[in-house]
Image (cartoon, rainbow, N blue to C red):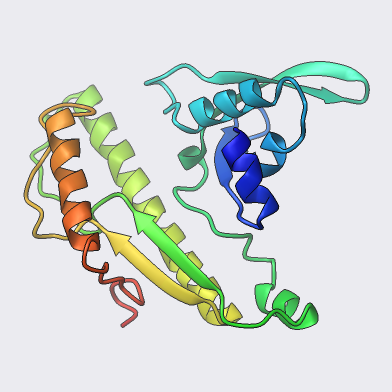
Length: 211
């Protein structure tokens, strides 16, 4: 936590997104400012935020985070931020270009979007039963939601003069997981990313269809 606080003081930012289920809205946590707060519960809160950000609904239990409002203490239920948005940069309503101009910030900002997924769907025969149909439907929803987020971020970057850079799993990666959280698959995917990046990653400058 001390290292995170030190980097925060240098101007670096670490944000983690969760979903507040009770309010049905996204929450973006500034981990650096929490780490720098000096509060005794800071480390425990960071642990809870990171755990919540990976708590896929129905697969893992939600995380209760204690908050205070109007002098009363409540428990908020938080889960994976992907429930609301697969990836975020900043709110579309925030005119980043105007902010940079107002404060005379030099240079051109860069945005790096890493999409840990394929962009094209895989063919898969679906058994005509409730659970397989539900599973495939949810996976399709997550995939298309992530693609929509990526397009939105790209258009925001175009509007605000931000250098957009995109990485995703290439279509020619033909390894498929044999189970949920397959360690063999994850290791091979890691090796792919490492080999692509070691000599300078070939970042895409636009999502497919916008070239």
